[in-house]
Image 1: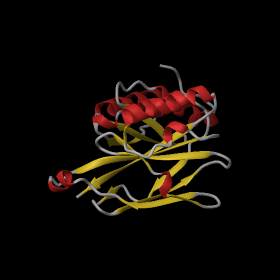
Image 2: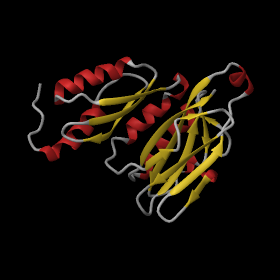
Image 3: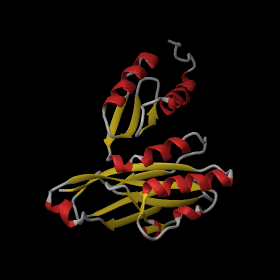
Length: 220
């Protein structure tokens, strides 16, 4: 094994790069959210816990620090989100900051949040539900001087509600220097079709885009 860098200033970049390049298999995404010399926080999306257990042990062996990994278990229909985030993570640009006001939302209650990006950038906000359907939330966004906020009620369908389900939902923000036409849709669209189209358009612009996703559970 390589030795960790001696210069403490290298720690965040070294660890972020390691997390970004870790191969957790299909339907796996992890991002480093906080790093100091002695503490590391990682957020992950995936359908299984095991790859994150392997990440924890490999990270600890490499850097001699046990990371705090928060795993958000998603549905297979949402897996295209992990491919999308991994692709955009290869770009070095700053990610938008997205904070949700809660992580568990009773059916029929509102979910709210705050979005902060660098000035001059344009953001698209999507919801990907547990069935893998993507919804455009741009009309729900209230822009302010230094941030944007949103709050809207969200409800499960009758069958899921009757079954008493609690299901994963993902809110994702895509940010870049220009509009993404593929993200300006009005009818709910399968994420497995939509997200590759957005990536294809981003690739043709040759501009730097970034994305952040946050998870909450709906139901109960």
